[in-house]
Image 1 (cartoon, helix red, strand yellow):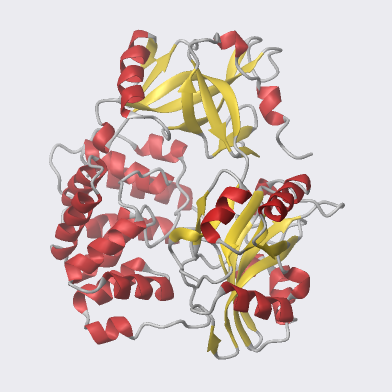
Image 2 (cartoon, one colour):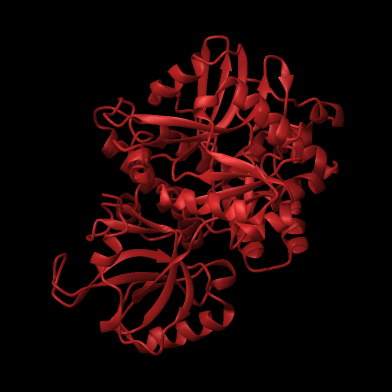
Length: 507
């Protein structure tokens, strides 16, 4: 299949809010695929190519971009093969070879295909094809029950392979997919609520547990062999020897555990998230020691626990790993839930997750059985530039470049602004139209994709915190930034400072 057909479908999916229309468009695409392309296309649609991240940053991507091709000729297989070459190319001379691979790829791509490829490689692809929507599309394309497809994807941990099996295999083969110790499954996800008591109203009696600012891990043990996977199901066993040691010491033969790992300071408090994540970015062991904390168990010694109630799974977890269970309490009392939430925040954690005690482990689903609660921080920042949107936002200025005031000139000119992140989230259609008109009035220069503006517009941004980052001159980046509103009542000189944001970093 030509890559152009995939790009056109992603544009169509991104341009509609109708779930039914998204499913229809995706199912039509899947039906037209050759079997060899199915897994690759599914990975691209959910912005997780089967190769994972291949180590291309925005500088490398920008350097590789030349004149686009006039007509589409690239196939899905061409892109998949190029990603494979980028993944495996290493050693002496690999930098030049990778750059050459990327230049050849982008030179053969049309302008729309170049934008798509950049989104894939930079992890910034916004197709509108959420995994849950695509799962429904796979079921429709294969004419299989959606519950059967969803469970197979959950237990295999791979929607691409599940799509291939559903479309080309038999119903019996799809139903035969089961839980296998050593093969990661999709993690269960949580909805959100404003408070612990509000979450408890939805769940009823629940386990109210600390929400750690760590890295999600899924740990599989078969005898003495231990394997550790990330939230995206990438294996990181060799990077976490201390976690392997802990799990080998548990009184079990076979087990699957779900939890978090994070670095702790000398007082037992959480270290910054970036210190934890640094251990996932290199093969060599670091000085930072990571501690595992588990909140669920999916299998133990030949017994699957996925469909058992949470209360039962917690009982098993307390029996086999009492010293490594995430802190929490089971309660139906709103006052108790709020106290646990305050305790978690006081201990330096993100908040709590409220989990219905009777719930099964619904991997890959974001339902009402798990609800996360964490405080929202808001800051007034200045718009420095805005990028043109894609999909349903084509023709509109969408992705904001955000800056914090630097009154003393610690990171640049005194009174200037230091970029701290980008966001396109939270922008309504009304705001989208307004900012497209307004920022072109404030334009000082532009490139093909970005309009730089006078730094005079203040926008209130909600964030979950900040993290250390070398990408921006202030040394930090916003976490999960989204637009709350524009502040016409404030001048840019009243914006929050880079020093205020840097103070959010844990010492």
